[in-house]
Image (cartoon, rainbow, N blue to C red):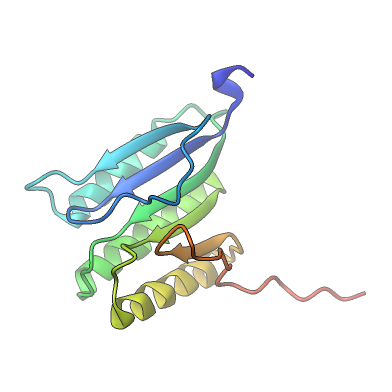
Length: 148
């Protein structure tokens, strides 16, 4: 298979976040965007969106992973929400919010609520949260009901 025909995965790593060990890199093409040492989450969001906008229009992106550090402040949540929604709208790809498997209950709840909110905002059904390779992938937005 030609490497250009394989879908691309975009991985955005916030500072102090963990690598998504559940992600199977075999045979994947990926773009990794890491937050710089002195870069704010807002700057990371803008830089990521500029890189997404620069992708060729025929580029197939299957998945975007946003690896989140354990920040729950409004600024962090707002930047994650804007980034996730913009990526889903622009690329029509699956979106996974990721955090370390050592993540405790409050942040797990906050991240799950964020993913559900982004899914509702975008009308997307392909958004989930993962913490480890053992988590099952469960979409956080229910598919629309179908009338027979």
